[in-house]
Image (cartoon, rainbow, N blue to C red; front, side, top):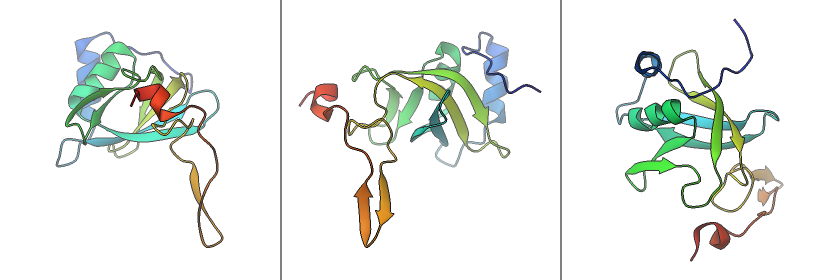
Length: 142
């Protein structure tokens, strides 16, 4: 076994079907997916995937998630330009969580921060550890 990332996309229908069969989706047909910068280990975000978004990610090599609030596919960077190219994809030991090793272009968080994990408990409350790098308005418009 090798730790060397094998590039996506997965070109065969059989290969994608094998991955999908190994994933244990929850009762709503979803699985948590953690996006991590492939070369630094920085945890960028957590989102949900369904079978359709996972199949598209495997097929194209670009991160596609399932948006629970929109009730449909969310192609990362489609409106903001902040694209995630998937370098490798891993399943945890139970097949019920995915790890996407990505090359993140720009920021990952809709707040304009590199990572969604920017708040931490300090003293008597939460503090923001990082400031936005870009304004959400510049990413998504008004």
